[in-house]
Image (cartoon, rainbow, N blue to C red):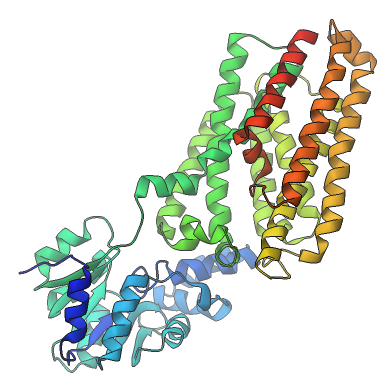
Length: 491
């Protein structure tokens, strides 16, 4: 057995110079030709539109996997033009087709999903796929391949353990973005491994991007009640740290869910198209498993704190899922919910250390976070304008909405400063602070910070998430530190 995993230009040029190979090449689809799984994508596409179909899917499974795939395919309308391809492998297939070699797409996906992909690429002479009665996977796919080539020699390209029986009968094996342990298993059973194509980035870095650990920075809002309630004691700090972790785990799980539900829209976004699921750098099944693990760990930790905190975390999850499934498509209601998701972190922090949240704090946070949510939308619209697009895919926004949304956002930011000023002059402030007059210094700092955020947005210099931008921005940190010092001095 010989193994050659190099992809050098010398080998590519020698392959192109060689005479056409008259042995047909059968190519797997999911995870091989495309860096995703059409069944899972179509299932999430269907669930996003009709969540109640989840129970119906279990019913379809009773009739077998082939019927299950067919029923989902009948009700899905994927955007096949945006599916992430294994580019180096597709280039290799194109060169083989140009030389006159016969290429056949052989997949366990339903024919209704496989044929549009074959038509998009244009170099497959035939498609072998599941049809509602026969699930073309493993041994069944091998039988179909042998029937197609009438028992003659064939080559096969795949990526998973289900492909091992086919590789064992193939003349040559081509391995593309293999699952863990697949290469060793293929070496043990295949007559010859012609080539290995691998273009996925480092797994750890990719997972860190998918989990969006940098977004955990938003959870510092859980510590706001420590400052406003003057609860500076060690047990409260430990409780906030545990609440921070629980919220982070649930937030990462919801990010995974949102990315799985929003694959098509993300692939048409100038920056979101690079997210691990949209780009196909992480398998969808692995993402689903990780999502459930994070949900379990997050709620397990939350249960160790107060029941009020657990209820708040559940409320956050329900609102986030509602946003992912439906509300994100409703103009203006989406930014109001985003502002609520920021505010609910402050409420959760108060519930974790069991202190009351003042109406002043809730009013201030709602307006300031509404301003930040509108910054996020305006940043996305500015990016689309630069690309010459007029509408935001998956959202009910147009580039022409930018002036109105920015006006709303600036107004909301300044209203939050007004709420802060009214609080400073209120009896509650005078009863809780020894030197409440110092708090007036917070207003110009807030005015500068809000104005600077919107100026950066208008210039196209803002990050997709303004809160993350602020937590990485040196000037914002100077403002935040001064505001904290002023608050402590006032106490």
